[in-house]
Amino acid sequence: MAYKSELCQRGFANLDLERQARRGFAEAVYCPGKTKEQIRKIARALLKHKQDILLTRIDKGTYAYLKKSLPALKYNPLARIAYLVKKPKSPKPGEIAVISAGTSDLAVAEEAAVTLEIMGNRVRRIYDVGVAGVHRIMERIAEIRKAKVIVVVAGMEGALASLVSGLVRSAVIAVPTSCGYGANFGGLSSLLTMLNSCSPGVAVVNIDNGFGAGYLASLINN
Image 1: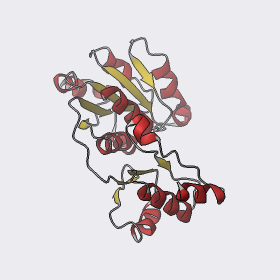
Image 2 (image 1 turned 180 degrees about the horizontal axis):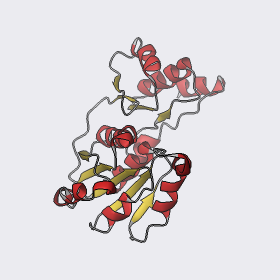
Image 3 (image 1 turned 30 degrees about the vertical axis):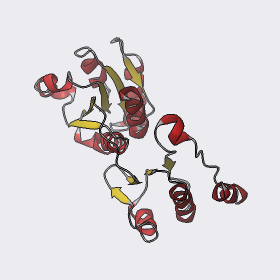
Image 4 (image 1 turned 120 degrees about the horizontal axis):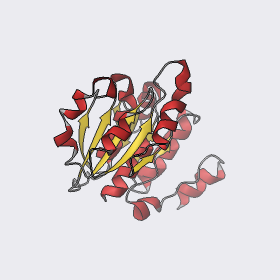
C-alpha cells in the first residue's frame, strides 16, 4: 500500500482500496473541488492497485489532461463521467430501466445509466416520457414492467416517480433534478414531491445525483 501512503502523506487522498472487494466496485472519484493533478494521481493510484476507475462530474478539459497519461480512459460528455474498467464485467441477469421525464433531465439520467453499465448492468433507456403527456409513459409500460429495478429522473414537480411506481412491482429509485422555473427552488420541489410519494416502494436520492441512483440500483440488482 505504498502508493496509498504516499497520497496520505501529501494530505489530499486516503483511498478505500478494499471497497471493490466489499461492495463489488471500486471507490468512485467526485471531481469538482479537486485539481487536475490531484485527480490524475488518485486515478493512477487506483490503476496501480488494479482498481477500476470511475470519475464523476468531470469536465472535458480535465479529461483531456488525464488522457495524456491514461490513454485507455474513456469519457461520456453528457454523463460527465470518465472511466477505465480493467476487465469488462459479465452483464447481470436483471435489466434496469432508466426513465427521464424530459430532455432537460438527460445529463442526470445518463449519469445513472452510464454508472450502471460500467458496473456491469443491462440498461434500458426510456427518455422524455414525463407527465405532461402521460400517454408517452403508457406506451412503454410493458417494457418498464420487465425491469428488475427502475430509476426515474424528473425535475419540475417530480410527479413521474409516483406515477411509475403505481404501475409496476419493482423498486423505484427517484432522482429529483434541478430542472425547473423559480418555484422549483433548484430541485427542492421535485425532491419534496418524491419524498412525499403515496406510492410505496419509492426511494429518493439527492438532487441531480444520477451516480447515487445508478450505484444503488446496481446493488439491488446484484
